[in-house]
Image (cartoon, rainbow, N blue to C red; front, side, top):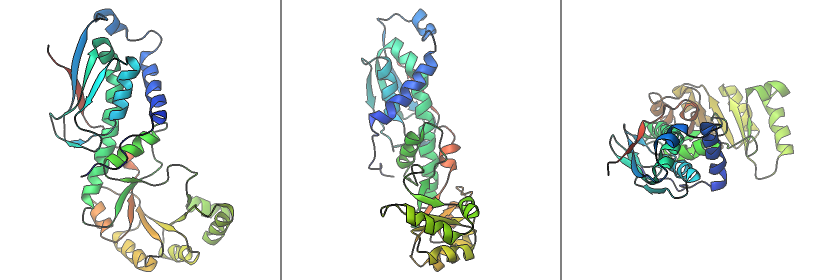
Length: 287
């Protein structure tokens, strides 16, 4: 798997999140354990390594965490975001004041393990649909405050993003349709209100709803909770007139069958909101 083009997020997006995490951890008095045990003059080198197979993401947060504690810490990246690793593989090494390494360790690993878990979950779906046209995308089901980081991790795992937020695309869902009384009304109102650069996607659950959306000339259709056979029928109905998105309880086991229906994209919320953390650890090196 190749590393995605987006390998670095703007520091302006990363720094406040990492700073807040460090502030939360340091509390009112700082790292009293390290401060009482380790002399300020002590220096150390530590290696961050994977303890299980997975895909790395979050090293920008690791670098930021250590350097916010002490700018003298030096970080060497051995496996950049997007790299596949196995047990024992060194991901990065950090060298500098021992106090800084110990104080920043937990926050750095919290980000790295979580975001690598997101990347690994994404890669599992990307692998499952290999050979099909479908791309794996994430949704807005992200951890509050971590959206930019989690969506970056999805890219590291070979996926792409759906909407980043409510303001970069129209997605008319079932509750929108219920609120206004019909698909046609919802699409017409959206089209009157948005700019010419904004695309419109409509969620449908039946082939009849799909036909109604297609008559309005939408840009994309979200085919919600359809079986693979129904998805294949929907793709035939669309005939390339709109982007087709399959969504709803997509798993590693079902992804291939969904992709075989011919849909363009497959969205999965669990790769961000429920991805298990990847086990990585930091160990001090002797000498």
